Amino acid sequence: METDSAIQPSGKQRLIQAAFRLAARNGASLASLGLRELAREAGLNHNTFYRHFATLEDLGHAAAAEVAGQLMAAIKEIRRNAARHADASVGVAEYFLDWARDNADLVTVGVRELHSTETPIRKAMQRVVHEIATESVEQIVSMRLVPGIEPDALLRATTSITHYMFYRALDYIERPRQRRAIRDELVNFMRAQFLGQLALQRTTATSA
Image (cartoon, rainbow, N blue to C red; front, side, top):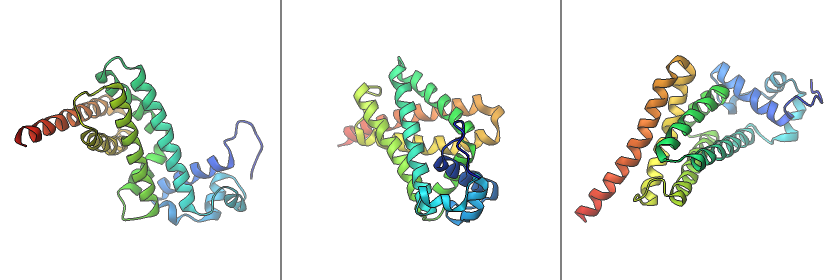
C-alpha cells in the first residue's frame, strides 16, 4: 500500500515504473494492462491510478513526455560542453547507453510500441523521436556543429539517428558486454548520417 516515505518515488512515478515493468515482463502492450494488477505492482490502492491518470493512454503519454524531456536536456548539455562535434557524438552515445541501462523496461516497451501497429502509445513514442530530432537540429544549427547542412537535411539525419539509438539500446540491454562495439557503431552511424546528408545536398545542388 501507499507510504509517505521521503525516499519513495511519487505515486505517479511508481505507476509509470510499474506499468513498464509489467509490460516488459509479460510482453504486453501498455494499453492491455489491468488497473488492479498495475496498482498491485506499484504497491498502491487501485483507486490511486485515477488521481494521476484518466487512462493507460494518459500514463503512456506522460512517460513519453518525461523521456523526451530528460534525454533532450542531457544531450543539449553534452553538446554544449563538447569542444568538437566528434566529441559530442561520443558523449551522446555514452550517455544514451547509460540511460538505456538504467531504464531497461522503458526502452524495451517503448521500442516495441514504436514498431507496433498503429496505437496511441506508438504515436507518443513517435512524438518522442520527433521532439528529440527537432531539438537536436535547433542546437546543431545554433552552435554550428555541422556547418553547411540545411535544416531539412539535418532533421532527416537526426531522425534516423534517434530511431537507431533506441533500436541499438535493445542490443546493449541484451548484450551489455558488447557496449564498446555498440557505442562505436552508434558514433559511426551518427557521423555517416551527417556526412551522407551533406553529400546528398551537394549532389542535388550540382545537378540543379
